[in-house]
Structures are given as structure tokens and as C-alpha cells.
Image (cartoon, rainbow, N blue to C red; front, side, top):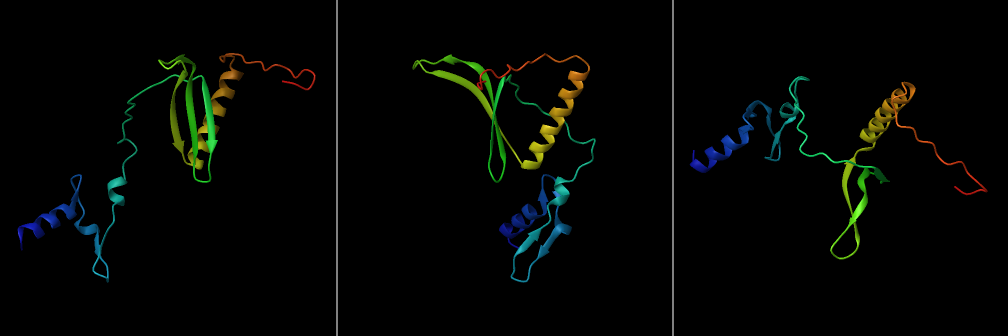
Length: 133
């Protein structure tokens, strides 16, 4: 066996320290299929949360497409830039529709609980006057 072939086999059999030899399947057309699902399986206790950045937002702009939801979390008011224009800091998050539904439900439940316990900042919308808001 050549050194090059040996290196290719070693590379194909281990990913992140996991041996994949038993997950390797050869196809009839000479290709190879690897089942990587074992690499993404974990115990509930395994993952640790690594929050690499935080930001404050007092305004969110939500957009939806047929594939996903994007939420722009903005920090208002902005600051005037060197060019004289207003610069508003923000972070855009993309989510699947199902993840966005779970987020909306979780936020709604938390806010309802805080409101019922009287621990929520009050917001009273202005009543409509003369057909205007």
C-alpha cells in the first residue's frame, strides 16, 4: 500500500477522534458513503453553553421568507457617524420557522407570567383618537 493511499484511509476513518470504519459503506458505483450521525449524537448532560457576545436591544425588526425568519435586534437611538448619518448598531439572527415558533411561544409564556405576578414594566398603548393612532 502506498503512503498516499494509507493517509487517505486514515483520514477517512477518523473525524474528530471518532472512528468511522464501521460507518463506511461502499456504493455500487464505486463511491463511499459515511454515516456521520454518531458524531452529532450526544447525552443531554454533554453540551455546555458558550455565549461569545452579548448586546442590548430595545427594538426588533422581524422579516419572514419562505425558508426562514430573520430578526434584527437594534440598539436605539443610533449615534451620528463621521459622515453625519445616523448609525444604528444591530445584530441579525436567522431562525427556522419552527425555532421562531418556539421562541415566540416561550417569550409569550414568560411575559404572561411576569405580568400576572406584577413584575413587569407597564406598557399602556395610546388609545385611538379620531381614527388615528
